[in-house]
Amino acid sequence: MSRTLLQQWRDIAYDESADKGQLQKFWGRYFQIEKEIYEQLLSNPDEEVKGTVKELAEKYGQEVLTMVGFLDGINESLKEENPIETMDEDTVVSLAFDKEKLYKNMVDARAEWLYELPQWKDIYSEEELKRLYKEQRESRTVRKGKKIGRNDPCPCGSGKKYKQCCGR
Image 1 (cartoon, rainbow, N blue to C red):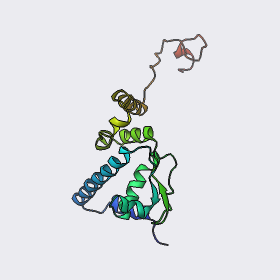
Image 2: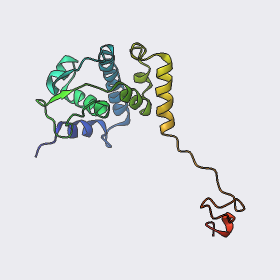
Image 3: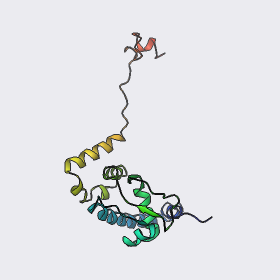
Image 4: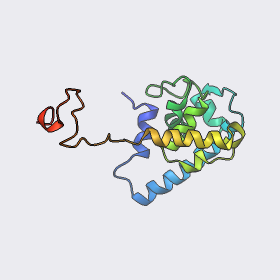
């Protein structure tokens, strides 16, 4: 059985045996392409861009595998996910994205070159962008509750000291 487009993309993009310098160049080029596509998408965020994988690659002047990489990256931010695991060049895909989810996923990926694109300022106010950024950053923060001391009342509500109850 032949490899799916997504498998082919991942074989190239995450090649463990590849020269580190070559891989860095690859990702540097890819991130620039990704940025250019997002600039176009965000300049008209309510338009649903739809077509086959091949048509979208042509629309954005990219190779099909590069477009597959882009589709892989944006998939979780779409209103309806594309069948990226099984798609081929003729699969019709949609780039209708959830703006808030896309922004938060960019923040989560620490992709400053994407979440700091000037087009975001036409979609959200400065305050909204700060709020979305903060919400996303805090959603990843694990907060530990206050530690119970040995002589504190037991949190189970028994009225005993923690050391004499659940702390045994």
